[in-house]
Image 1 (cartoon, rainbow, N blue to C red):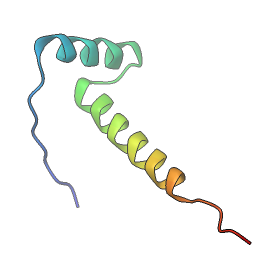
Image 2 (tube, rainbow, N blue to C red; image 1 turned 120 degrees about the horizontal axis):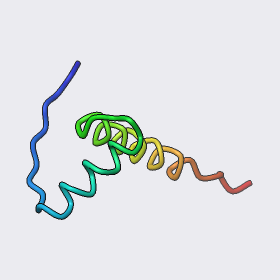
Image 3 (cartoon, rainbow, N blue to C red; image 1 turned 135 degrees about the vertical axis):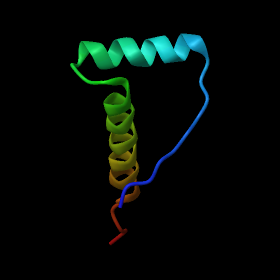
Image 4 (cartoon, rainbow, N blue to C red; image 1 turned 180 degrees about the vertical axis):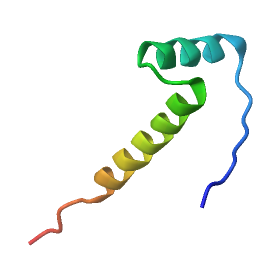
Amino acid sequence: MDKKITFKIDEEHFERIKEKGNELGMTMGGYVRYLVLKSSELKVKGNKKKKPE
């Protein structure tokens, strides 16, 4: 299920995101989705702490 999100960023961040996406051959929206998914994966990995034995 796809959800739409909207957020406001300043011009400087907009340009940096746009440039980085272009460097990776992605659209700006594609790059933002990539960042969100990557961030979500890192949080999941960080939450998997070893249980004390």
